Length: 399
Ligand SMILES: Cc1ncc(COP(=O)(O)O)c(C=O)c1O
Image (tube, rainbow, N blue to C red; front, side, top):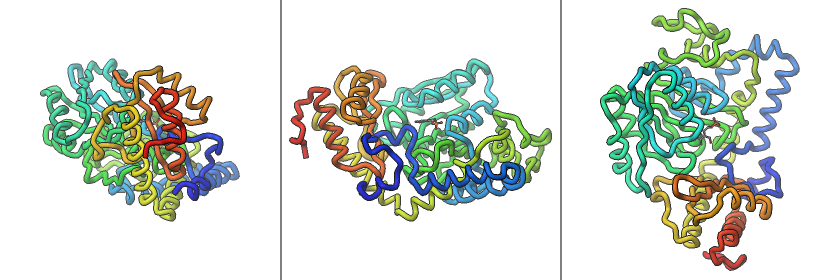
């Protein structure tokens, strides 16, 4: 798969890049389309920002909505999932004693967002430890349900988790939350382009995802989805020309002719919207190269590498295969200094992969994208085998 596809990317050839999950990587034709948007902005800023922005911003919304199974008035472009989630989270009307139910697998920046909001509102976070290994959707749902009280106002879950690369089965819990009048807020930073998404079927009140990770659009492209019946509650983080004093009144229109929800979030003062405008090109690239088929090959390679690593370390996996993010696997490694292993992998072997401590485990989180190859997986296992003293002779690899 990869020899052929690696040529489409600008990634450095001297680095084995196994960390697509952190910031993504953008194929050359998509990156060129991005630069073309930037050039157009630079050539006539007023024409671009004052005359055509509203109509241009609508296109990615429509294209993405078709891809994600939602209405084009229900998603709005934001620069990243952190921003999308902050807009939504900081809009929630929380009171002292209200509870936010979440897990111990969430992303640090969002944990801080909740801590910030709790300090301001007096609400509190209730963190459920998801039992590992994750092997059953019912077991997962039971663990979360056990944390629900009559003060639970919000259910906050990653759809794919960052430290553990788990695919959480969120749908049942979202439906149950709605029945109980609990808002569901889903962190989908890793899902667009990684798993097929149908936002209407998932049914979350709020869902934010990055296009710049697995969808491979330029950095700074993400979306915030809010269910139509919840949109009236959302406020912008930055108040600009899109805000109107009457925006909360029934049937109100936004300042630029969209819904208030869209106009208030989309307009954030002068900025470069090129990454968002390039999202349709990223989807076009993916379609041209049949990327879901590429993704399936990547999944196989990721899961195979995980199994080989397990054979080397003898450490149990964090989940059964159906709960593993397809192209990203968190591989437990023996007790070590993770920072040192990470730094040495990069300095000595030019392998870029996150290695870190999470709770009582050391983890190497492998991402496999279309530009990666099986020899790169071999190189990783050889290097980890050497550094962790796993008894691997380079070249004599496990099958
Ligand atoms: C689960 C999760 N949520 C949120 C984010 C934040 O993404 P961004 O920095 O693009 O906002 C990440 C980033 O890796 C993530 O893994």
